[in-house]
Image (tube, rainbow, N blue to C red):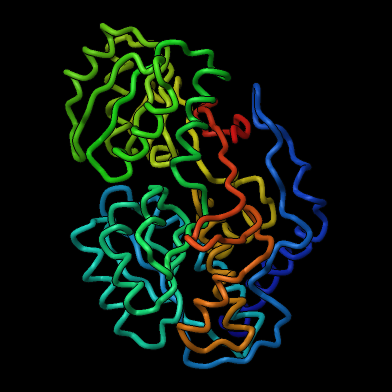
Amino acid sequence: MSATRISRVLVLAAAASLVLGACAARGGDASSAGGNGSAAAPTAAANAANPAGDGKAVCSGVSIAYIGTINGNSAAFGQNTLRGADLAVKQHNTANPNCQVTLKRFDSEGKPDKAPGVVTQAIAEADIIGVVGLPFSGESKAAGNLFNQAGLVSVTPVATNPGLTQNGWKTFFRAVGNDSVQGPAAVKLMTEKLGAQKICVVEDDSEYGIGLANQVTQALGAKASCTDKVKTGQTDFSAVVNKMSSESPDAIFYSGYYPEAAPFAQQLNDKGVTAKFVGPDGVKDTEFLKGAGAGANNAYFTCPCVPEDNFNDFTAAFKQLEGADPGTYSPEGYDVATILLKGIDSGIKDRAGLLNFVKNYDGQGLTKHFKWDDKGELSETPVWSYRVDNGKIVNYGQVS
């Protein structure tokens, strides 16, 4: 048997496993709980869309793109999303020999000043009719109008700043809940589940960090006992750590990304600060655990993402075909790519058609039900909490 044939058999086996697993699940309620105070995470719904489809699709000369960070700081989120999309395309193409869709990759490095140029390059390639991305709020804000002008649909599995859907863009869709949902959920985690009465909020200088911190402080009200600010790329947090030490809060909410959150948590631990460390989806990554050391032992997270390792067949296929464990937003990247592929399989060949398909989409995915309002926000926006347990990030229950 040729190497190509073996590869195709493996992909088909993984796709079949995912389909059978989805068919075996019932309603998304059954799962093992993920720790003290946790709720069962959903499993694959029986009617979850599968990128393999019926295997009868016919198409030619069409592509979708992943645009977002692949290298640089905070690259893990982009790589997680890209691999999820890549898995969907591999399963689709193996099952549909007469419809081979190309997944093109463009690296923005997550930078708002670089994203517009990269997006312009992608727009110039006429075969690209749909985009998975951009992952981060800052780059999404910088480049969103370019997609809109080109009529190229983009579905972000990650970016959560609420203002992104208030720009009048007709091509922007969000596959997760925004920070106006995550902020109050984080407050619920800290005040109700962790029992914190005195809470400090520390924000970085990113579009994401500033926006989310505002949502959290608004929801906290009088319980926001102190605030402080840090910068992207900062490594010495001694001044902020000293302030946290003197304030003696019950919990510290860090609004930003894991490259800065990790050394901050480590330095808090070294100073003897015992407050619960709570981070959002931008911190929830194994890279945080590596960088924070013992400082991660007291950490909790919120994320508008479902526990990714709970989809057993998806996880097995992901490991087999992507050569890695799925991470935060891998299933969401898979769901978004699947929706775009379903549009192509329906016979759509151009950007206007795929935009209209997404706008009117109404269907179940692995992670949630997908149906958007006229601004590109989902009707279903669950937020989950997580904690660190024995060096791993585990489910701590749904909080919204």
